[in-house]
Length: 201
Length: 201
DNA sequence: CCTACCGATCGGTAGG
DNA sequence: CCTACCGATCGGTAGG
Image (cartoon, rainbow over all chains, first blue to last red; front, top):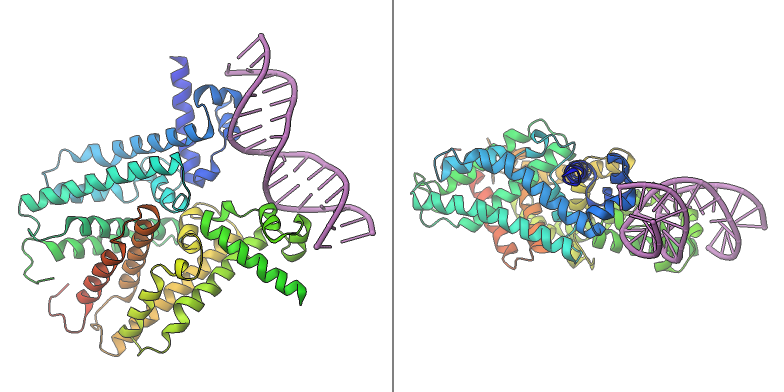
């Protein structure tokens, strides 16, 4: 019970480091210091650095789900829910109280050319997220809010690009127009496939 | 003269590490080993780790320019040259012989929440690149290949998103359809602003 | 460019 | 969970 609270504090502090400095910024020693225990205490909670990294990715997914996915279940299915999800997705890490960017966006580029458990775990979480996006698009097609010949995978692919460009725009270039640019791109993308659109591809 | 050749070998080996494992993957000791000299020999060439990192970003920019920008000057101005540039941009690091991904894409997410000279240098190179993209779009407008009311910055912003999604798609998800997805997105984007397009925004 | 060295930190373990 | 410790590696320096 006390152990579980300590673990929760470790995950919270670790997620902050992960957001601020990426996986290389998370070290066993620094995290132990931040929470006020010894390094070996860390290994009592996480058997290895790899286990810690995987636990932190899961924690990031948990917090992301809490802030991005859960509030959206109240919206009507299909496009309205997708739009609400995108609203929550863009900039979620800041609204979740994290000091830096999205750990998954970072993992996409930090782990891309590495092999191992951590990469595999990040890839699984990433796939899960894309499938969620995809299911909303597919539901939009079923509900005839999106053209029946729309390519759901293409839409998801482009939405991910908009998310990444928005992330770079906000966190790296610090462009105040990032939100406007992202929504202009999103509306153009959805407009392209909208059931009301008459222009052929 | 011999020193210059050694420096060139250091830059080449360092750029490989940078591509494969990002900035955290470049260490003075490993790079010294790879080229067969001592660590202090490294400091004779680059005064500090920071200097080395900046030199590697410049080297990455040099190689990128060589493979992406220079071959494109033969194309007609405006849209044809932009399309040729995009063709060379997507996947350039592999065609340049690098073992991993694009160092600038990685820097965008590795350095975003850090401060310092390295970040500033990466930001300057990034801005230079976006300005190049922008100038091609603007030239397309001047040549009436692109609608006069097109927002060049928005186009560049979306192109960067397509590049990042393509990068994640190729290197992280290893999706063989990445090129097709990227070009579908590019053609849709350019079609949206094409001089021949009659649909309003 | 070298040898030889510095203090700090890395992930991890022994033994309790 | 702790103290105490391990070998390896980090960026960097002194002196040549």
